[in-house]
Amino acid sequence: SAVISQKPSRDICQRGTSLTIQCQVDSQVTMMFWYRQQPGQSLTLIATANQGSEATYESGFVIDKFPISRPNLTFSTLTVSNMSPEDSSIYLCSVETGSNEKLFFGSGTQLSVL
Amino acid sequence: GEDVEQSLFLSVREGDSSVINCTYTDSSSTYLYWYKQEPGAGLQLLTYIFSNMDMKQDQRLTVLLNKKDKHLSLRIADTQTGDSAIYFCAERTPDNDMRFGAGTRLTVKP
Image 1 (cartoon, chains in turn brown, purple):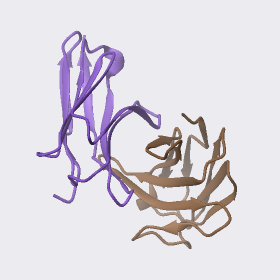
Image 2 (tube, chains in turn green, yellow; image 1 turned 120 degrees about the vertical axis):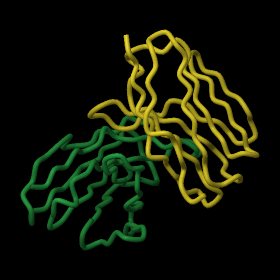
Image 3 (cartoon, chains in turn red, green; image 1 turned 180 degrees about the horizontal axis):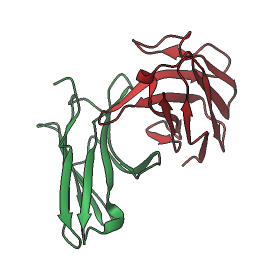
Image 4 (cartoon, helix red, strand yellow; image 1 turned 90 degrees about the vertical axis):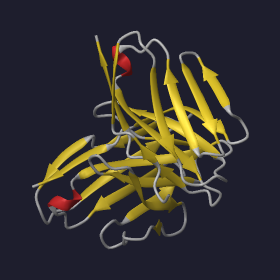
């Protein structure tokens, strides 16, 4: 398994501001993923963060709104830009390990936008 | 169907068995998973099963897979109050995508 540290664990932000979420893994991983979990809904993949190249975004998510960095094989950040109340959600970092059949998650960031 | 489907709520008494059901989308999915999420925490991988198996047992957890009906279940024996959480079913599709259900909130009453 992988130990994934994510911070902040929660934040309350004002409309129009930006928040950067950090994700640190205790081992080198090729693929890191960012998910959004809205209340009562399933997880939605925002993007896949690849080391050394631009992130790959899913339909409905764009780089200007959710810029991602992946400077090395153990770290990634997700920024939620120009926030609105609709961005209030839990954001989760995840990684695949081993032969890639297992997906592990960080503890999540609970974001509330006022 | 397009979505992984689960019942939203399940309530059991402490000591009883819990059975959480899931219908997934793709009969060719390679792996099926159960995750547990406690309040304020991320998703914890509980167990998973390869698609060529029909059952997997791990201590109090039993996973049953019916590929024909695309049905996955998680049975928790001797359910404890610490088992109260949200349980997510997930599938890994042949395209290597992960699809998640909306989660089943299990409440265990003393």
